Image (cartoon, rainbow, N blue to C red; front, side):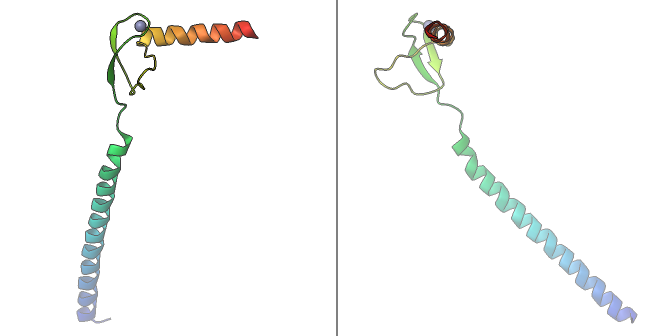
Length: 92
Ligand SMILES: [Zn+2]
């Protein structure tokens, strides 16, 4: 293989490497853009200020309570959960 041919091949390889880098950069950018676009769909729960239906304490819940539905503060929610499980246990 002549040196000229070798130099030409090396230049070609370098060009291809640059192209690969460029394409990888594009792919990475596209991926990041997609990722960014998907991010808002995984938004954190919507905290809503409510008054606890049990102890009348102002608190916030990680969802939007339906109108007319009871909303409980964290303490009452857990207490109700425990009471419910006891009631279920008694029924059995
Ligand atoms: Zn409460």
